[in-house]
Length: 422
Image 1 (cartoon, helix red, strand yellow):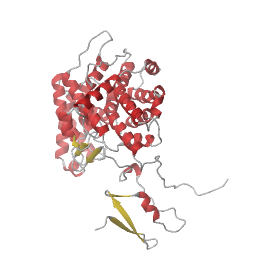
Image 2 (cartoon, one colour):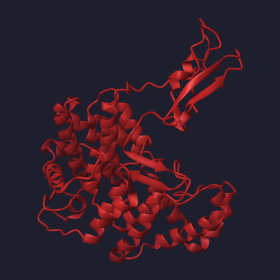
Image 3 (cartoon, rainbow, N blue to C red):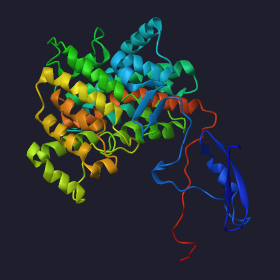
Image 4 (tube, rainbow, N blue to C red):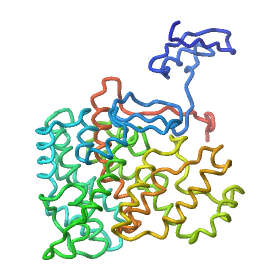
């Protein structure tokens, strides 16, 4: 049995054998299929890359039909239970879990770079008082490229590692500063004696520079688990943006700003905010039958259900559901959880949703947890960007070092006017 695909062009009657490798055919192999010698050759048309692999990757594996998510081969369930975010970030970036000494060096390097240049604060002060925190994060990430011109040495491994330390270390600081600025509160500097998630909570919620704040351990752990779940997710919109910008050999700060801008969109990083709006609008369990009827009639969408990749229960949603209960033991039960649970129960038992494979995704519960932890809804995409930085950088570096990759430049099907004259 040969791994080839035989294609017959009915326009010409010619047959072509195209090699199949790793379950795919190379799009350039289709160019040999021509209706005439002047023909450009056959292309594929695939809006939104629904069935096109743009790269070969060894970072994240997803089986959407089976509801499987793995980082570097490790099931997400095991990582969420047994590891912390910085261990997982190391895994995503380096391909293996760190040894004890590697982990200590990694944590030290990240912790050492959590501070930002004082002029970064001046830059941030230039935003209007009610600027969206995510917009501030996007702008400030891009501005960091001017603070670190050495980041342009993208083919120097030592320089790349330094930028990775800087970005993973500084994004929680920038995120917290964006929140504090939007609330007119003084910036709180990082605390090197705190863990990654706990440090972020400290920078967010310490009342003033003269006040000591001890982040709740349960909440810090819950946030750390959420960070693990969001570290990477294959070739999503923002990862694709990171790779595409990186293909031009832009520095990683500029590429990360572009990835964050992609994440800013409500269809990507803002999805959990839409879930909160929906649950708030529903208001009570009693209204759920009415909502379900509206969904079936095509009069509204059910936010937080269904996924571009998962055609089964999102494995991250199962983990988050458990985390939610732990958080609510500290914060008190979020009234929206009862609505969410009732909505989920109806959807999982209704043939309408089962046939369409509309299962709860990660956004369905994450927003409820963030709200219980007192994060305002405009911080939700920012909370997504913090852990996703490790995934973005892993995708950026993998693409950069892949000898098969070139600058991203998709083809188009031109359907406009033929040549014409004035």
